[in-house]
Image (cartoon, rainbow, N blue to C red; front, side, top):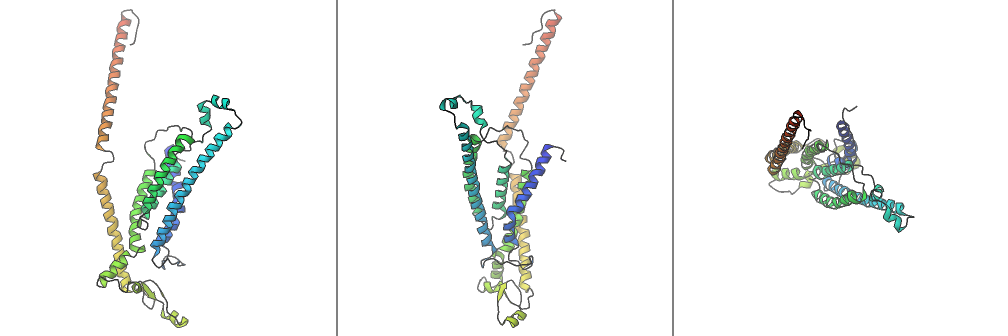
Amino acid sequence: MHRTQSDYEDMFTLKVFIFQFVNFYSSPVYIAFFKGSHRLVVVSWSCFDSGCLIELAQELLIIMVGKQIINNVQELVMKLKAWWQRRSFRKGQDEEKKQEVPPWEQDYQLLVCEGLFDEYLEMVLQFGFITVFVAACPLAPFFALVNNWVEIRLDAHKFVSEYRRPVAEQAQDIGIWFQILQLITHIAVVANAFLIAFTSSFLPRAYYRFTRDSSLHGFTNFTLANSPTVFTAIQNSTCKYPDIRDDHGKYRPEYFELLAVRLGFVIVFEHVVFTVSRFIDALIPDVPEEVQIKVKRERYMAKEALAENQKVNGKNEWKCTFETGAGGLCTVL
């Protein structure tokens, strides 16, 4: 049991987000970090010849564009549903009866506003897609911007014309959503570091250039390993697979050198990004100075009004006491 309603809502939000996170992100995470790996999975499903990064970018484009289109279609369906409800309510009434219906009865036929939970969840999931996998699909933020530009107009029309007026509730902040966004931001930094280091061919190409006189000649053969001699003797054929191994299936020294380069890149990348983010966070205040001055002025004026009110009430009480002591009537101005 939770002690407060805020604790209950925070835990409910966290559970739903974890469920949706696993549901939406399991496939991209598998393609980005596990597909094509010969060490982490039992059955190795290989990617395209260009690598898993292209396949990940294709899936992200399908998710971003397709999911956005589906959500916008759902918004239009809800508008049609509200229109059909109003049409059913007015069916059978003549024009005079329609004019006699009060506005509050017409508003009662609108859809019930169920809060902003689904809106927050959709935006947080979208934020995760455009940050965690931005190294694989740099166009994802652009599609998110276009979607939000369209959806903000649909939501404005929905809340103004299709929903009943919601009851305003006071809240201190957006709750646990802020902590979730911070967590996604930290995950995005580490995930992009591993995407660049292990999934893309950026570091292998740089390592090959550095060790081969700044040339990529023969890079494809460098990333392919010959099949073991036992397999070649049985099948009377030779094949290659993507890995850095010798003919006996053991890792070559270049593999460990490249692994050290990749791990070093991950450590340097995330430290640099976190340092820059902390510096920007400290440099830019959460509340602008102009807003802080206005808030202080409002507080000062509120204190002045309270002091003036207390002063006026004090004078009235004194006058009332004086007149009562004199035997007159007590009047409070």
